[in-house]
Length: 136
Image (cartoon, one colour):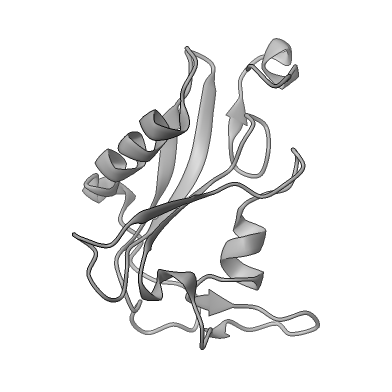
């Protein structure tokens, strides 16, 4: 099954309502500043894409959704979440999480998607699932 970006955005929004995926905390963070969800989107029978959805700090219902893929392919999108523009960051050479003064979720909901299957926490269930091109 092939997905378009708009379908993935809709799936991300739908998955945000899955309470089993609700993130209840992070190490050394007493209370998250907004709702976070982390789980898997079924891309096929054998592929599952890991996502983290971070809701907007301003107006989660009306603010836009930004879909983030790290470059590569082959680089986890969690790099951007925890070292670039997420609500909390771990800076190079440091071993603790701290607040980001300028997170992208200040005025947008952010859907971090780890793709293709096999990247980061995404699952590639068969050897064939690791074969990628621009169309799959």
